[in-house]
Image 1 (cartoon, rainbow, N blue to C red):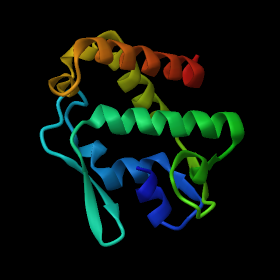
Image 2 (tube, rainbow, N blue to C red):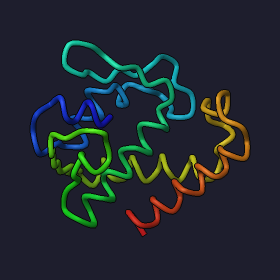
Image 3 (cartoon, rainbow, N blue to C red):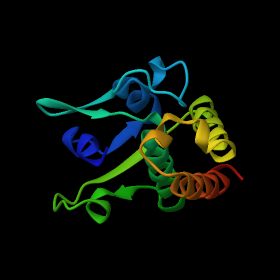
Length: 138
């Protein structure tokens, strides 16, 4: 996700544009990613196999923007570009993220990610997502 944001060489994004470019808007459910999502990065595309990973990454970036107004990507990645970005979202886009985080927090083992992650780690990840959701949306 960070490489995608850096490769765009801009300082402001809408959540809608990120959702559209990654294919999140085409999924019927975030629980089971029927096909890998693709994130365009310069000349190639990175694949994301679990939508909830992308949603949790986006929620962290949204929270950072809420708290500090922007995110310094250099603080999060091994990158020296000194890239600072801001992500804005509509009420509807915030509702989508809120709903997805809440669903994952209440039933993490129904997500396809549990194919790769053990139950204890899934529960821990769901708790972290719930904390982020509460900070973002109350």
